[in-house]
Image (cartoon, rainbow over all chains, first blue to last red; front, side, top):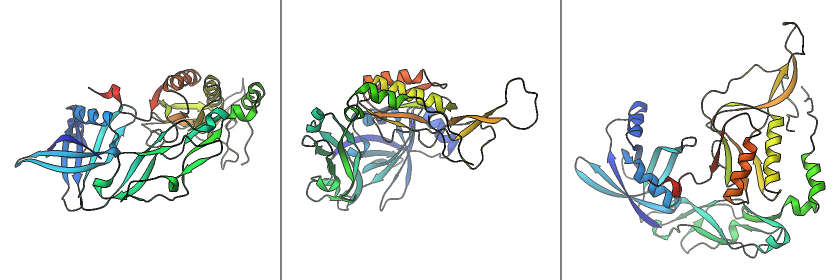
Length: 213
Length: 143
């Protein structure tokens, strides 16, 4: 996995008011914790963090946290465990960094990227991306950034399941093998044949029924 | 149009949607979505009308999800009726929507087509809306 660097400072204040002051000052409140580390409350520069997130998916990176405190700078390798985002303002609210040990297995979710154009496209099918990440467990060095799935051989009605995915050696898939990742299904246009008749059937107004009490 | 099959009580008290949505406020199924930027009541007729606007624009070649459902009944008293004599009869079904709720999601089309489809759908809705993509932080977010 790709490693990126992020600067963080230890913060003294915590709570709603202090966090709001931090956010208005261009920082994001964060917390750092791990298997053997004590939790530490941090603040990271919002612009630097957003830049980092705009380049890579949060599941596909290890973050080298450079934590600045009274004693100097500490370097900690971590993953972004959780990210809280205000979905209306598109602003970061809080981040959780989880320390990783290179000798200990890590369980995480890896994004699934579909590649290729399915054979079923020409027959009027559409590609449905049903599951966007796979839960895996592996030593941090062995974890892939993404899992690529080739869908070019998929015909109409075919699907690719978790069990069909090839993962690198040393990576254990934790999701159930029967779960479908992607499928090619006929669109309603192809199913109906004539668009006009289907459209009329689909878009005709139905009277509002009075429900039972 | 969408309507509940069965309800426990036919007539409900009026509800005001305060605050921001904490559920159904992110894209969970498709690639792009339409998010309510303000709170309001969306009737079953408006939900259906916006859905038709989306499917017509994408020529029914995309997968569309409707993320809201009109669970609440709205009653109305007949015209020229004096006040009193009890609550009116249920006339329509509405979805009470909080600010931030994702109303529709779409998959299987390019971003510009999805954006245009959502713009057309937004005309049919009584609340202000915003277009939403799955990846919130992208090239445009960089400072």
